[in-house]
Image (cartoon, rainbow, N blue to C red; front, side, top):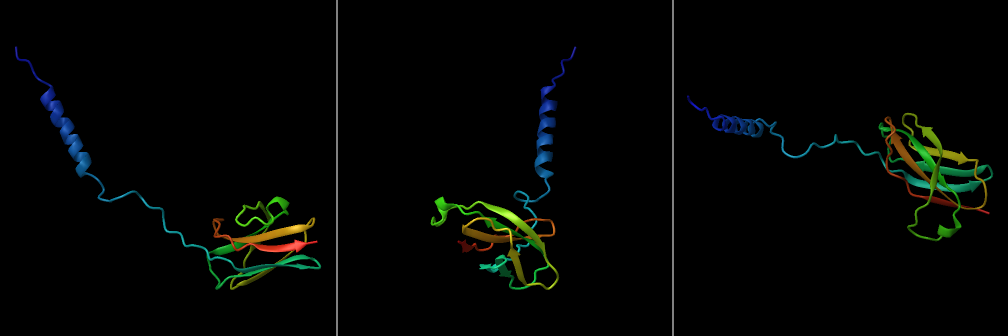
Length: 145
């Protein structure tokens, strides 16, 4: 009666499996990278001025970018504890969303819903057709007495 050994056949099989996994790779080096997304332009010259009807906010783009679908306008409420604190985080809330038209580069809006007195800050953020936000604009401050 002959005894058959299983381990040489099993070790050869495991070795062949390991070699096929190593040699059968796709050839790409490194982890996958996300697709390159075009950066939205930064808002230029955001200004807020108190007028009779409320606060007039104006801003501009250097040139019309087809990726920009609109803007979200934010306002912070007066916070006396951080008014004169450079670098402190303000709590902004969205007040409106604006869709843009072709070839528009200058934008204006009047905020008529300003309640209270104090220092109000505004900022604008562009967004693209998939509602992905771009970079925040500068903050513009108005004082309402």
